[in-house]
Image 1 (cartoon, each protein chain N blue to C red):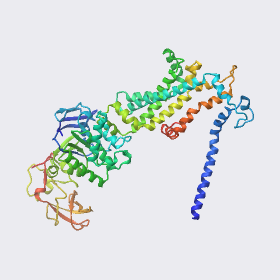
Image 2: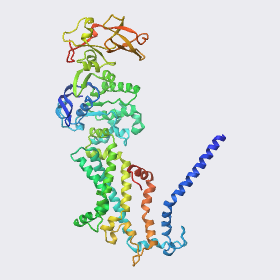
Image 3: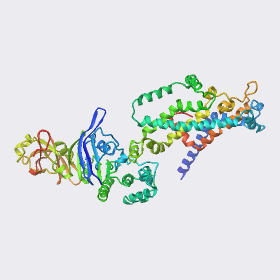
Image 4: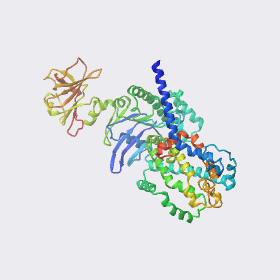
Length: 339
Length: 284
């Protein structure tokens, strides 16, 4: 187990700056998830930590060591790749023990560690199979096993579940969570799947355009987003945003600096037209099983999303929407949280 | 039941028709080979007599005379070791160069690739004279070095490099990243990951290079003059009488012997040879 810190870390490819100064500290045994839209730099940042990408400037520390110039294998990190990256010409046993062989770990010790990791991940019956003979979930477990045998200080996961089907993803997610509990290692995980981020993370790092937008626990990010971007990025369906002016009369209290107000679809309640915060006409009702998602058009043309759990509501129905005052989120003109 | 029988009959008739058609198409390709082998067992007079595939009198002596006429065993060995050396060297050079061109970002990479492509455009016959002067300057004329160095670093080597480059380009980059995470150096990634995963391309390069080297005629003709340094293609053209007229019966017997390694390679690696032609886009 070890901590990790990034101090004003930057990365540029030619003239394009993709990581524009990231400061972050990860504690011992913490599970940190990087999220953000495509191209925000989350995978690049992970690769910089792994050593697969150079750091253009700034300082990266793993434990107390500055590792900017340290080769990947000497950083004490292991990485699980999106495509598993298993060597197709080696069987599971050799795949898992390959890194130890390169590091010239004695054969007995290598066999012991591979067997131990295989037992942890229930891979023992598969040790003599080749990757082509394994299912997606089994391959993913082998990839994790390969990371475990090296006994790294930090585990890095680059969208490891994105190639699995929905059911298997849920299963593997819980396996990774229990693995973290069992090993207690520091883990950094990149995903674009919010459910993965919310369920796995001790701490979520939201990135946009190579910058950290907010760092916090899943609950902090969901309940107190630091800015408009995080407010709309975290949570599905995304938060509804309105200019404060358009609902000023109906708002009970608001901060002086507030310029926008945000309302999560699941916090909105239906009420009679004309009463509540806003009124609108139902354009579309999407039935999702547990609830329905209403697309409500406000008089000014804005579309509001409302998570609704009740009898079917037909299109063109006019209704009012209300929300508990403590569920409102206010943002100033710069998009930062106003309180 | 009747319908299934009819379908079976149609399928059998179909197969017979296809087999017959393929046999007819194969005649122009197979007949010269059979004629060569059978003529190797004929006397010189019989070869030009009434045409027949089966010799009237089997002249086993031809295959002994082949070795008496010139140091044929030595020449055979020359061809064999040169072809094996060229194949091994080409595999090494082309896989290293192909990997560098595919995976390493270095200044002038595009220029190097351009030079290589332009070298492919120049016919071998055009470069043979400058190559001869270069080899003479290096004191390598009438040695086997030109027959090893020119194919390895010449158009064949470049072709092999491009083939390997294309194959390496298609290998998933994450595997190399995984190798680096496991502690491999660049050379280690090439040896432990890229090469084992490129067996089809390596087989293609090996087969094409071996065949080309085995059949090489122009270079031995230009660079080698001593009889005991001849390779097979040159030796085959040397079965002549004192007046320079070809001794057909010996020449055809020697040619029959010369194709044995190629046949052996073909029988062992039939599938890889067909795949290699498909992979490299060249014909046999």
